[in-house]
Image (spheres, protein in one colour):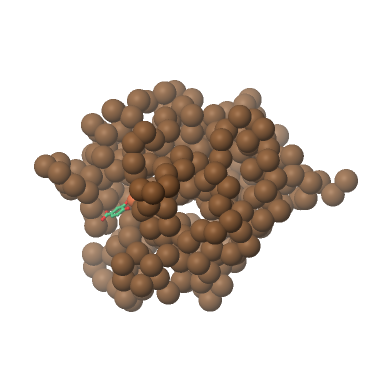
Amino acid sequence: MKGQARITASVYSSHVPAIGAAIDLGKTGEPYWQPLFAGYEPSKQWMREHLPDVVFLVYNDHATNFDLGVIPTFAIGTAAEFEPADEGYGPRPVPKVVGHPELASHIAQSVIQQDFDLTIVNDLKVDHGLTVPMNLLFGSPAAWPVKVIPFHVNVVQYPVPSGARCFALGQAIRRAIESYDEPLKVQIWGTGGMSHQLQGPRAGLINAEWDNKFLDRLIADPKNLATLPHIEYVREAGSEGIELVMWLIARGAMADVTGGRAPTVAHRFFHVPASNTAVGHLILEENQP
Ligand code: DHB
Ligand code: FE
């Protein structure tokens, strides 16, 4: 036997589109942006030392690939390649994202048979929700150094999935990855968040205290954190704070959730301001049993 695929780490990061614009326009050294990018320098170093074969990247499309005509709750990208989407200013000048159709198809099969209804997407363009975290963790290479399985979650148009369902889905994804017959190193990323609200009278809302408690609980008590109802995210972290349910998919895929060893915190970072969003970032390294 060649060995099975395994999850080596989970990575969490906000996806603010203005971060992508700062990179594309050469502004990362400006005083406004410098502290934000400095916070990701240790992560890029860590990533070079812990490069996986595949990233299973949980993100949300922002009505760029999917619009109100089709609203999948959970969608898995099974294609060989994914081009950056045009989000209004032309596609970002980042490399195309190379997929892993075999592993993605296996995960689709396994997770659907575990009773999660995934939409299978063979034709997908990826927006800032996916490309900005890629830049933050890999910088701006000519080609991305890993294969990526994009996994979209609807957190834009209600009804959106609960944190509890996302957490359970993460466990199903772990089982799927661990039953793949090739010794691939796989990271699972949860992206979006932290607190932000882009519209209405509360536009600009940031709740740093709540965000930092969320990070504490994500590390130490994710099962409990997964029981938070939507209304608490919206009330405390703003309407777009609901993106944080995606982090629970990645956290649900870690070993300790089903009785294994607790992960090690390799890096933790929190920063305000970045556009309208509180930026949170965490790397949790899996420990071998
Ligand atoms: C911003 C944040 C987001 O998550 C997003 O999708 C769009 C804009 C912002 O902070 O400006
Ligand atoms: Fe967003």
